[in-house]
Length: 88
Image (tube, rainbow, N blue to C red; front, side, top):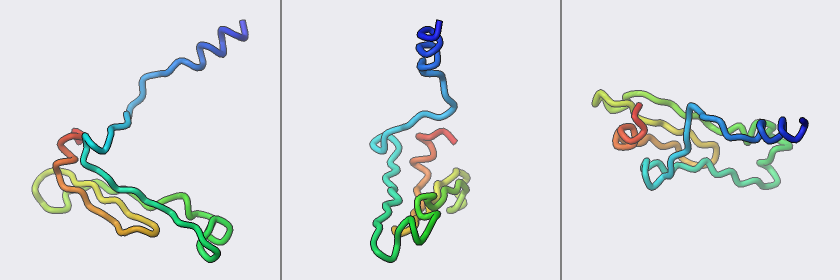
């Protein structure tokens, strides 16, 4: 019985979100973290919590845009072409 329980627990279930490749969405943002002696997880406990993602109509065209914030990289706002692919 334990073997059946384990196998049943390993089945993939439907999820609300699915990963889409950047080639399809046009979103290529990466919040790359480069550690060194003065910037690391020991000195900054939350360094790997990342920045954030915001959704809103930044350019007032009636479609939602994606805004990504970075820790050590520049923040970026995507155009609405990605929003139409993501079906927001």
